[in-house]
Every structure is written in structure tokens, then in C-alpha cells.
Image (tube, rainbow, N blue to C red; front, side, top):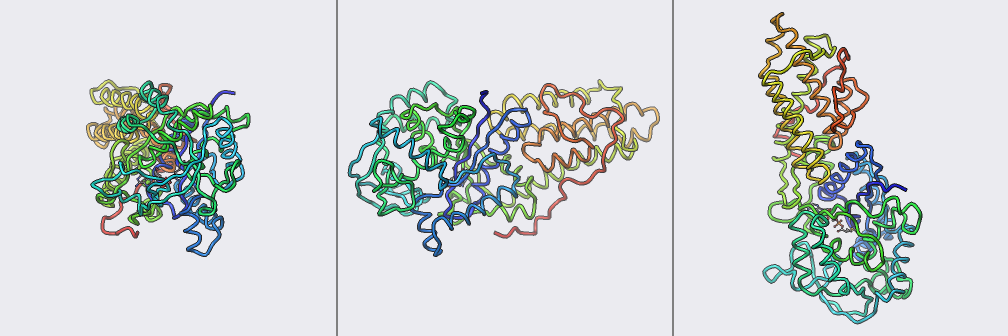
Length: 514
Ligand code: ME8
């Protein structure tokens, strides 16, 4: 069976409702899934929820609910946000599902049988909000970083995975494949960690302390530690142990943020290696949204609720902003001013006006029928053609497959800016007054319509509703993929639909509630 393109997001904790951070990684994955589907690839896009662990148990208790009732409620919040954001995932895994529990227990048993697990007493520092033991090396200026929340010292007997036995293999694997963990600064961070001896991984919690977890099949006095449970979702969802697993595994991309780089870049590869499974092809960890100097996080309570922005600007503007502004290698400050500036400048002015002008002028000067481009060859035509070819090439070759969305959109906006300048240089309103310039006006209008169609196609993965509006205004049923095969998608004589503004401007003084 031919392998399809398999992309994942983290499975999010359900101790609270989703915020901008969760929405961001999910949107990034959705954009890649849509891009691959547009190119005719077979895609499996997985997202879901991490429902076990102490925090969930405590959150449910506080609300007087059973853990599962709490999870069901949170799952509904996540799913309704994904719907509002037009997320088209192929599966939504919840770690409380039997299919997942079965896979976790199968892997645990396999590792136990292979002598990869053992039991010993353990004392260490534990972060309740990150649900992991932390070491003093992770302190900054003698303090635990704020996203660890409260850190307490605990001692108990637990099960361990012989992670250290795979350290040399992992270091070599990282060195041999520079594109495996991206971007470069994350790879370097992992390589630096692997220069020191790594410890074995604690993979259990005593069931008396934590009831809400998957029991170890060989020692029911313990449940599986959350990371060992959570990471397995990436193989349980595509059907580990079933024939269809071959169709998807290994994953082509695990998309995460840098907070969970260590579990994904060290725990997960060594777990897979110990279990004799193939490695994911790429792990990509983007930066954080910050609020001022702090990470936006549930623990700090400084989160942006996506619904506030959706209600005001729509899903596409939100998707655009996240793909344009959130960076791969660095962190980004989130501000409403920046959102508004992007909305008004990029969407309402640059893109909205271009498409609107192109379609309106075909109606005004040619009765709505796309003219044939019989002329061309002026410096202005040649430059527009050059920028078009350049942008299309960069987009498909350099940026989209690498999930460099900021740069892909920057390239697309170079084309938007060039096309707007093309309108000003050629001033169709002047050509329309000169009967001798009729062929020239035909050519200018045809090229503008062609550019609008190309933009619809390039923007479709990012802004599916806007692409559909552009298609409707161009009276097209959809866009072909805009790669090398792209040639005049709108034939001469084709009747356009009515122009409708894509993004009405929003005034700066109406504050978004949070
Ligand atoms: O860590 N900026 O779940 P989680 C950007 N259940 N992205 C952010 C962000 C921010 N400020 N805050 C959160 C877990 N995210 C585990 C994962 S996977 C097998 C188990 C996004 O709810 C980003 O994708 O804390 C980050 O990695 C993830 O949410 C953490 O989600």
C-alpha cells in the first residue's frame, strides 16, 4: 500500500479550554494538510486530546465531576473551536478511548518483555503543571521557569524505561540527519542535552496516587506516566497492529511548540527505537506566543481566547495572522494592535482591493466577460510575469513543504503588491477612455483576473473561505493546484460573478473582549 502524508499536532491537555497557542499549532497542521490535499496527496491529519493525569483528575474533582464527564465537556470545547476555525482533521484521538489504551498496553508489554523496563525507588523534583520530573539544570537564575508552575520534591517506587541505553544511538541519528528536528536551534538544543548523560525515564505513577491513567499490564499497582501514554497516540490513531498502519507510519511531521521538544525529541525516538518501530520523518517545533515577556499559558492565565477574534474578524483572518506572524525559531509577542494592522493593511487593503478592483473593472469596461490577452511585452507585463513565476516557485519549492508559512505568505504578498502596482502603472480607467488602447486594456484586465485566480489558489490552504469567495466571484468551481502546470485558468469570454469586498475594514477603537 502506498504511504500517505501523515501529520500530527500535540494532543492537548483538557484541564482547561483551548487558547490561541493550541489553535496555532492546529491551524499550522491544517494548512499543511490542505496544501498536500490540493496537490493530490493522500493525507492523514491527526489531532486530539491528552485526557489522563493528575491535573485532569484534580480539575474534575474541583468541579464535582467524574474525570470522564470533565473530559467529554472539554472535548466539546476543542471540537467546536476546530469547527469554527475550519480545521479538517481526519481523526480526533482521545487517550481515554479503548483503541488507544490497547496500543499503550501493547507497547508497554513489548518493552517489558524485551527487558527495557525496570522498577526502582526514585526521588526527584516534580512539576505538576508540566506533569514531569524536572532537574535542577532546568532552573533559570536559581528559580524554576514560570511555566513549570509549582515544583515539589517527591519520593516513590516506580517503573523506568532504559532510555539512557539509547542515548548514543539517538545522538548519532540526530547528527546524521540535520533535517530531522527543525528548526536548527531546536536540533542544537537537543544535541547539547545529549552531550551530557541522560537519565532513564520514569514511566509510571502509583495507582493509589493517580487513579486516572492506563494500568501497566504487568503491574496493575501502577498507571502509565502521562508522556508514555500521550506520545503513543501517534501510533494508536493510525492503527498500530493493524494492516492500515503501514499506510501512514512513519509520520511525515510531528508539529509541536518548543515546550514539548524534549519529550518529542528524546523520549519518543528512544521509545520507538526500543520497540523496533520506524522514526517519524520530521519533528518541527515552532516558537511561543508571548504576552509581554511571559509565555501565553493556562498556568499563567494570560491567554487569548480565539473565539473573541473569530467573532470579530472571521476564521480566515485569524488563520492568516497565525501563519504570518508566529515564528518557527523565535517567540512572538501577541498584540491586538498587530492583529488589526495585519487585517487592515494586508487583507482589507492589499488583497481585498486588488481582487475587488480586478473583478469590478472587468464588469465596468467589458460587461463582466474576461477579455483575451492579445498584447503584452511591456516592462510592466514582464515584471509582473517575473514576480509571478518567482513567487510560485518559492512557495512550492522552498516554503510550503518546509512549513515556512511566514515566508510563503511574504512571497505571496510580494505578488499582491506587484499586481497592485501593475494596476496603478497601467491605469485601466485611462485606457478605457482611449479607443486606440482597447487591446491594451484587454490584456491588462486578463492578467489581473489571472493573478486573482492564482492568488486564490495560493491562499486556499491558509484561507479556505476567502479562496471560495474569490472562486465564486471569478465564477470558478475551484482552483487547480498552482504549481508548474498552472496556465490561464480563466478562459477568454468567461463570465465573472459579482464583486463583493473580501474583508471590510475594521476600526481600531472597538476593543476585542477577552
Ligand atoms: O503539552 N505558543 O499539552 P498542552 C504557541 N498534552 N503554542 C502554544 C502555546 C504558546 N504560548 N501554548 C500552547 C501538552 N501551545 C501535552 C502534549 S503530545 C503527545 C502531548 C501549543 O495542552 C503548542 O503546540 O500543554 C504546545 O506544544 C502545545 O500547545 C502544548 O499543549
